[in-house]
Image (tube, rainbow, N blue to C red):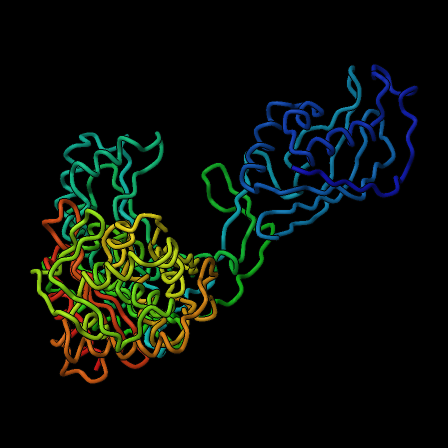
Amino acid sequence: MSARRGRGALAVLLLVAATTAGCSGDDPEDALSAFLDALASGDVAAAAANTDSPAAATSVLSQIRGVLEPESLDVDDEEVKEPNGDTVTAGYQLTWHLPQGRTWSYRADALLRAAETGWQVHWQPTVVHPQLAVGQTLGLLPQLPEIAPVLDRDGVPLMRPQTVIGVAVDPQKTGNASAVAGSLAKALHRYEPSVTGRSVLEGMSKTKPGDAYPVISLRAGDYQRVKPVIYDLPGVRFVSQERLLPVTRGSGQQVLPGIRALVEQQLAGAAGWRIVTRGVTGGEVSELKAEPPRPSPAVTSTLSARIQAAAEKALDTEPYPAALVAIQPSSGDILAVAQNRAADDEGSLALAGRFPPGSTFKIVTAAAALSAGDVDAGSPVDCPGTTTIENRVVPNEGRFDLGRVPLATAFARSCNTTFARLAAGLPASALTDAARSFGIGADFVVPGLTTVTGAVPASDSAVQRAENGFGQGTVVTSPFGLALAAATVQAGKVPTPSIVKGLPATTQNVGDPPSDDVLGALRGMMRQVVTAGTATGLRDIPDVAGKTGTAQFGDGSRSHGWFVGYRGDLAFAVLLTEAGSSKPAVQAAHRFLAGVG
């Protein structure tokens, strides 16, 4: 805590040490300066010790500093007046520098008295502020601006301010805590499955004495439905406030909370504030300072309500945890982030999951081999049912054997054996470097989101590179990372993602863009996946290009299903965990694209 003090000219220079009976020799100016210096430095004990009532001064000064949390305090223009016997009056300017750039400045007065030990500040709360009376406390109240809605890219509201009622319980006032927890759980579980009798009891057990455990926040309509059951429960409290909530209940659960947090930060920065005095009952007595809030503009997200709804509907019926991320290649705008309830129960799989990508990673392996000049899309390559890299046997799915075919055909039919051989022959860091050129392994700090693109470790082992080459081994990615990869193929370079207009991500470790020749080959090969390869279930939707992936995990008996691709200025990745194959992911992609129209 820094202390900054200025000193104005004194009205009278006092020579009182020789004329005041019983004093230690200190003059009133020194006594005032000692008090104000300690007050400015934040040394409450020292400031109180320079008064004639240290206990009362300590209580008030501690309360005031606790409320204001000042970054510094300036004291200026001290003025000590003519003594009147054993008393002297003094004035000074106090300027509090509070967090968030707030400043509060005013004049105050003090009375100094001569005592046997010297001059002391006569303690009264008016020493700190002229309107602060005995028994009163100080309060600092935020003045939040009206909450504006969050809009999608087309101006459609995604979130609106709505009244919510917070339900909390004071453990010390419940009487029978188990009974109250059970009643709350029975009434509220339908609105939030995580609210159970056990969770409420655990929450209460960790709550400090005097505090209340926040159980849930309810929309106003939901609160009215359960109010008859919970309102009279002992120890239960209710607080009403305005909060941004999704227009469509349950929509965008992986992205809208992050956007709301950004809005709340913006509101805090635009908030006004009031400093007031409170009486002994806590009620407001007078207003000492007021700054109105600044207007809060509506926040525009990059999301599309239409595409988000199509993504959520495409996944809703899946029995497996399912996730989908859609990005606009030309801008990097995130258009949709969707998960079904099973995925939500496991966390943010769409944005921060780490899964083996399976054959979707052949996009990167193909790019690395094409960049090295080893092959082009028409190069004849072998696609045997199995191949052996050193001592590792790599099979195709079902051990299908295409013989010798163009690279584009091996890609479209997803030959593990072909891409294992290509990867084994590449330098140790070739796949790592190629992946970064598609955004995988790069770092993006997206305001409002926590994202992971994946990791592609370099390897000196030919076997490890072979396994990585068809998306197994040590390679992991997220739907977000693979959506960026698909967007890169379409756009020609890794787009900079964002979720709020005007707040792009900061990026690190993004590789150089793939060459035009590589991109041209990949676009043709990914289109062939749909027209004559493993994703023919999408042939009836025009202009779709992509790549399927079946990714084994654990002991190899279970598999995730992927489809990543693009259509026009829409790139996306679909993941169905434990789906067994890529076919359900292709079907979900079909529902998504049909829903988008």
